[in-house]
Amino acid sequence: MMTVEALYEDHVLKPLVELSGLSEHERVLLLVCSRPRRDTLRQLIGGLSSLEATAMRNAIDGEFERVEGDW
Image (tube, rainbow, N blue to C red; front, side):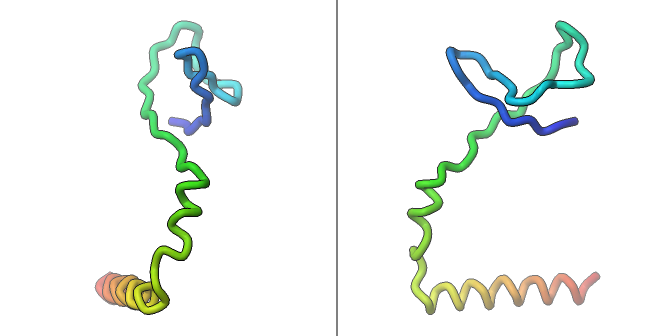
């Protein structure tokens, strides 16, 4: 299995790298997901107040501590 970035253009997916290990006319399965848009991520920056960010960080840290202790 490999992960390959591709460009969708003129209704065709075009890999941005050579696909080695595939035979001509070989059928493959594709899992297609869009890459996150940078402007969307920028909209999230500053979306939490300092208090909300601290509460989220404490909740995440607490869960990791609990999991690490159970292993």
